[in-house]
Image (tube, rainbow, N blue to C red; front, side, top):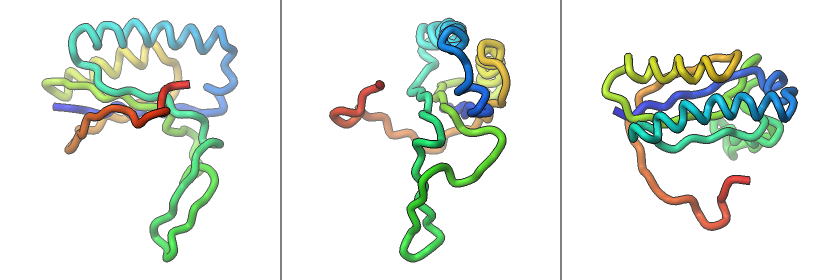
Length: 128
């Protein structure tokens, strides 16, 4: 079954890391990523840009309202996600615990995926 592991953390804390601190976290995560890739468990992943780069479309109005920034102001923000292929919830929780050891603070939310439509990125949509 495919699961999403949603990564939450205090954006102010994460954005205040020095380059060396951020590089150290990413290096620890790369170890976990490598193991998951080798096992054929890792699907698409993403690290989101800060919420200051977000745009929200409020669909509960007519016409829909477009706002700068995230929908809700919270202490922790969604900063990224993983897609993993695991046999059981216990397996995905073990992976999540490994990620938590590599990346301090925040929380991970695990959700089973009901639909996944793999595809390629549109032209010009590479990682910066």
